[in-house]
Amino acid sequence: MTGPDVRHEHQLLIGGKWVDAGAGTYDVVNPATEVVVGQAPNASVGDAAAAAAAARDALPGWAAMSVEERCTLMRAAAEAIRARAADLLPLVIAETGATATVGSRMQVPVAADRFERYSRDPRPVLQTPLLPQAVGATPLAPGGIIGGMVNRQPVGVVACITSYNFPMVNMAGKVAPALAAGNTVVVKPAPQDPLAIVELVRILEEVGFPPGVVNLVNSVDPAPASALVESPDVDMVSFTGSTSIGTRIMEAGGPTMKRLLLELGGKGACLVLEDADVRGAITCIGSTWTFHSGQICTAPTRAVVHRSVFDKVRDGLATMAGALQVGDPTDPKTIVGPLISAAQRARVEAYVASAAPEGGEVVVGGERPPLDRGYYVAPTLIVGGNDLTVAREEIFGPVITMIPFDDEEEGIAIANDTSFGLYDYVFSGDAARALRVAKRLQAGHVGINTAQRNHEAPFGGFKMSGVGRDGGDWGLLAYSEPQSIIWTT
Image 1 (cartoon, one colour):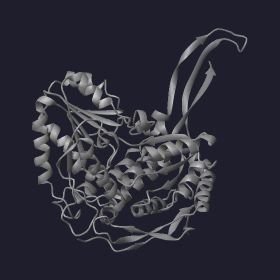
Image 2: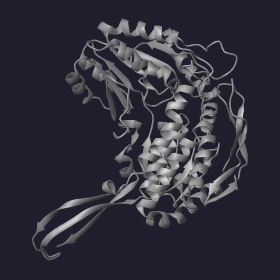
Image 3: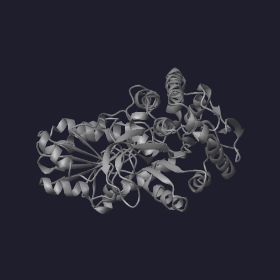
Image 4: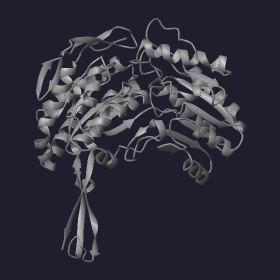
């Protein structure tokens, strides 16, 4: 197994200067080899405060910069990320455990694509006219033809806090639209795999983003992130991660009336109706195993399957699980890589162990693969009811729970019987029926006969899966405040 040399990163970017992190450094571990990838800077609470203040100081100049200048910098960032892809990919694989296939297609290239997407002129989205109104005289003002527009102003300073599963992509998906809308940012990566984000921030500095527009704070301790959430210099928190942390961010941000974009946990249902393409449904459900070892909030981790096709889907998934190569993520043949850490592996194993005592059946998996090292869990399939803990809570690992149903109403009820509501799926041979069912699912996103994404669609969750939407033009709306401007003619 090969990988990049050990990297030594000990500095943060604050106000355009690289400064030593106040709490030193800590080790970042390769989850496939259990060896150190590098040292990451470990910020102090004071560093977080300084970064927020620097972003506040840089905000007026960046917001006043011409749209053309900002778009030029966004395009330069996209080009620079693509130019560095060959160097970034081994680093991303080493610190995340992503397979070569996922890393080369979904990690580095998509980060560049997101900067490219937001290099377009944002004014058609941020400035929209209102239809004129004929208004009679009132005690307030004379009558007239009253025109107006909605001008969306930048929210201000945005703390961008991301999860460990897709570090570059998640961060680019926050930073790019935030900058395009005229905000300044403080970047706070997940502590497990921050090294590629350090490189991303370095790229943004090198292509010419002004001092203080992009700042980096990284720490293994949660206190600096909490300081950002509570800081009066931070106007908005954009967070991707667990629901438990998301609720704490809502509470902590309340006293300063933080604007929030929270993309939280998921427990996606794949509703397989009796007339479904079984093979297509199996492929979709199996993506829980094949796409970053289930460490993705959009995974269809609950297979809610009509009883008439239940055995076919179960047997197909069991066959699929046995055919998936688990191991070295740098090997192009590997489909299932490691989990991010020993702690996450133990958490997933505890969930699997809870199934049988609660009445579930582990059909396949449930054990560690026969590998000498690495934080691996075998693709696991569990059959049982929707009351199992593995069906109720987000596991974030290669674990699928299959639940049978007898009629459409029951299937919809099971799919909706969850505290989450991020991403569901419907498989049916009748597209009109599938659309009708999709509209009844309590989820922010529903895929019909596909696990593909439309990246211009608004993305976010119902219920405990979060607050707000981003993606496409919705990303610009998320990082801006509507201001109504009214005039008379």
